[in-house]
Length: 176
Image (cartoon, rainbow, N blue to C red):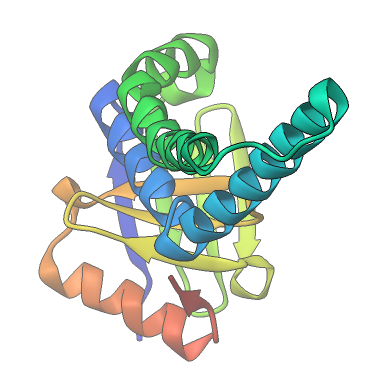
């Protein structure tokens, strides 16, 4: 199979879309449930400790329900707040990271991705990728939990997207 070459200039909108997909993958139901359980346990233990120290009695049931509500608000509110602040953070990263203002050429070979800009060249072996993800706007390649690369789908044909999916599957890179 021949190599697929993709040339693009990243835009701020591409970066926002990549960060949004990353945020959606990061804050899944399993994560939110775990966060709720931890927040609830911390709030309950804290309030029980404060009530016990203050007057040697346990808090009323009404207070416990308030604690559960606060834990739920924190669990739901944190990802929503992150989603609202995401464009601002992406804009700041886009301005600071000068290599995002350069044209990129990504060559998808059978054994690696070759990412080239006018100032750098990097070969990323598929074995070095932790996993990958996609939505209708962008494809993300994760080198670690925090290190990711993206390719905007606005530039790709269906055959190129199919080639990328097949190549990643053939090389054992897990899709999330």
